[in-house]
Amino acid sequence: METGIVNQNQTEITHLKATIVVLREQLEALSFDKEKAVQRAVLLSSDEIQQLKDMASSLRSELENLRFEKDAAVQRAVQSSADEIQQLKNTTSSLRSELENLRFEKDAAVQRAVQSSADEIQQLKSTIASLRSEMESKKKREHRKQ
Image (cartoon, rainbow, N blue to C red; front, side, top):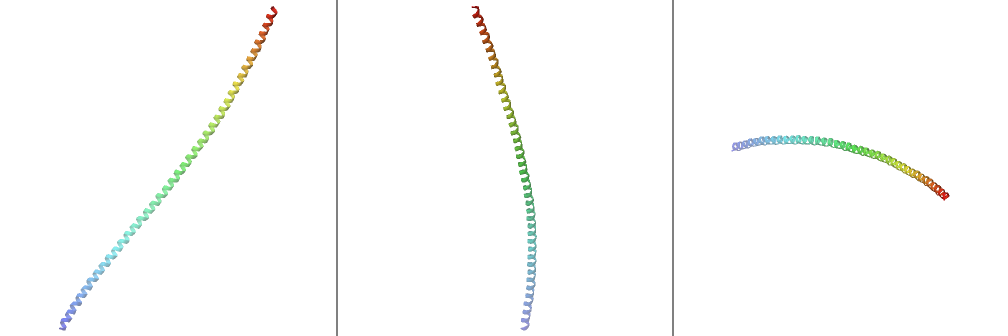
């Protein structure tokens, strides 16, 4: 009986050792799978981090380009406004000069018209005086003839 118990114990020990070996192998497999999953997760995270860094860099570059383009557009608008302002000032100055010339010409034309009228009036007065004198002379001659 003792041999039966010993054999039974030996069989149980063998089964337990086999179970330990199987459990150890399963534990190693699980550990390997876990390590593999961790490495995969780290690799995926690294890839995602690199993609995010690349995207951030790309967006930063695009933002800088947009700022540059905006600044250039503002400069063009400012220059265009300055050019337009200068053109308007030049036009205003030119129109002011033209207006001054027109006033001068108008004043000169008025002066010429006034002078011409004065000359004509003077000529008419002279003609009237001459005709009056001639008429008086004729009246006196007729008066003497009578």
